[in-house]
Length: 326
Ligand code: NAP
Ligand code: GDD
Image 1 (cartoon, protein in one colour):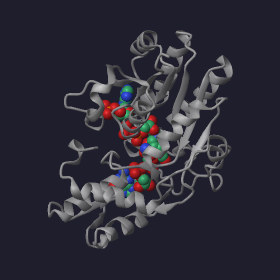
Image 2 (image 1 turned 45 degrees about the horizontal axis):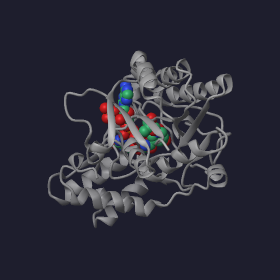
Image 3 (image 1 turned 180 degrees about the vertical axis):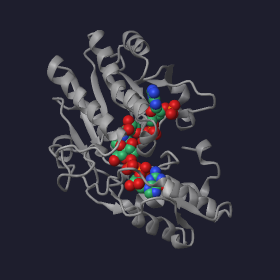
Image 4 (image 1 turned 90 degrees about the vertical axis):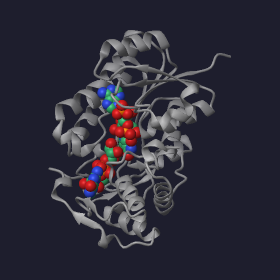
């Protein structure tokens, strides 16, 4: 039997690298779209370079997306590519809307144009809940995004549902709460913290500048969430699912756990810096993944303290960690 073909946008990112590994383990042919960069941007997938096919493209370039869908004719498409930094989205709102919102439409429409019968996964976000209307947040909680990024993701969510309803596409939204790992981008608060801890332990850094320590997030492990994304595309019917741990912690609690594990007191190192505050904040997120548990049999395998330890251990052992993602 011919191998199933999967196409991933955002394959160079945290989630894309885990998803590519998962799909290779399941014997898929994996195609990934990468962007041209003036420096290397494939550190997270270098270890599987020989097993995957990488093709240049961009979510802002519809003609390339059309060509890739026509030539690859994938069975499954995972749209993970995005300008994914919430804070940055306030500085480049139009670009964020173009990549993170319109990019989803371009890819869906490329699939429709080619009349592909493939299954489509959209990387939706708990940022869509924003100023939360209820707790915990589920698939039926109304959206109230608080950033250009969150607004763009709401567009991605609805255009995915629209293509499902209008054209009968097997198109699903994962509504994923924050998920982290040793491969997490270095500007997100968890990884920024664990990298700083590594540098402090090596005597290379003596302060960590952060913004709002009071916000709370439901933090899980990225690989678990990509396993869930794959499960969503194996279901009998297309549907939308929340993935979350059901536990919430403040940034301050993350600092307690991470610095404490390293034998340090964060109060000795953390400085509050106004530059890291956002024009509008998401204060509190807590997800209820009951639907994914019941219908897909999905379960998160890594809890908060274990996740923190995994990241601290990685960053204290490795020096220039962007060159050593695996
Ligand atoms: P990430 O590490 O920031 O990776 C983003 C990926 O998108 C990278 O491969 C990046 O390529 C690519 N990309 C950026 N702009 C692009 C463009 N114009 N065209 C094509 N690709 C582009 O993000 P992540 O944490 O893996 O998240 C994956 C997806 O899930 C994103 O859509 C994110 O918004 C969403 N999400 C993430 C979380 C989370 O907690 N991690 C939660 C909910 C939803 P370069 O490497 O070249 O920059
Ligand atoms: N990045 C960052 N840097 N965040 C900080 C800092 C800092 O120096 N100091 C405090 N924070 C706070 C932010 O204000 C926010 O309340 C919280 O830490 C988490 O910020 P991030 O780690 O940047 O993640 P996020 O929750 O804004 O967004 C991530 O999760 C979303 C899912 O809810 C991203 O991965 C999004 O792409 C994703 O959709």
